[in-house]
Image (cartoon, rainbow, N blue to C red; front, side, top):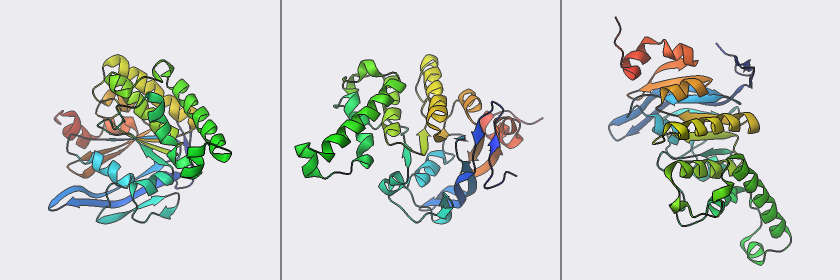
Length: 272
């Protein structure tokens, strides 16, 4: 069993830190429907942690618990060694947790640049009057935020569409813009809800590369929901597997791949 405070080194030499978030005995109900049943797992600093399972397994519900959209009826969320009280999504965002969505949630009529700039709202400290006058601190703040956003735009290779309205972009680029907006918030934990969904092979390869680069370049801890098992096995350090709201597997990609309960429920291969 991994130590709570000490990290580990991956096969490719990356350093993974201690536990930064713990989900303890989480149960979430919607009326008489149990979406998540008594699930526990942790997330370690600097790792890519995948959550997988068949449709309806409760994966997105778990991500919504982490991001504050849902409050579980039972269980606790611990973050950086402290029990987290019930929080609204904006309060969770203030703790340094950002996310993308399964269904793209961008401002279609705004440019790519303006969409990504909305990710800097948490870093804007000057008041509305100062921002409208654009003098002194507000001006410096705007310049600093714009410089950071331009860095993200360069990093994700979307300079050529920076002034294009998002509504005109193809699906794959919209997904990349949404990732850029999340990164603009400078999260310590980034939640990605099916970032490869609906993409062709080339787009998946690009997005996979960017996910790895974000983890490496910024040291961002990533929690990832994804259906493409090839992507999951290639990107993830550890994988938690859900089925009908229960946890049926948790470990490295190799451990999960050889887990018979996972094979039966997710991969659809019967046991001899």
